[in-house]
Image 1 (tube, rainbow, N blue to C red):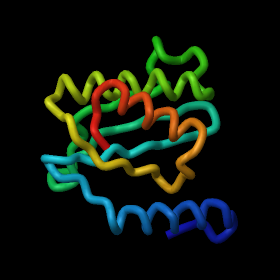
Image 2 (image 1 turned 60 degrees about the vertical axis):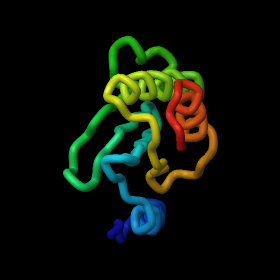
Image 3 (image 1 turned 45 degrees about the vertical axis):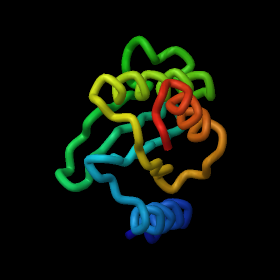
Image 4 (image 1 turned 90 degrees about the horizontal axis):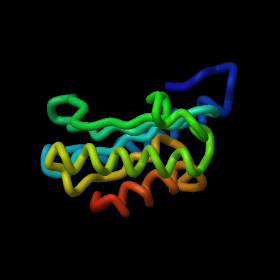
Length: 120
């Protein structure tokens, strides 16, 4: 479940499991899973019934690398994710913040995805 040596990782893992108990991505409303590291942020639109990724965007992509660890970088990733989800025919999703607080880069990604047409 978590790391015995790093309580921060253990607490984050506990939060992830608590959130994922309640949130489940269906084909009608897939799950937007966010991963945030110190340098980058990435998000995937996942259908949990089949376990497939329907759309994804990340600051690891070469054209989104500038400002990848900032709020502006997260906004560009969210906008790209919204565009790709729309292209895949997805309009409504549920948001999985991945154990992170809904604050800063995670909130910026979600807001930019909403502005590009995704309904949370």
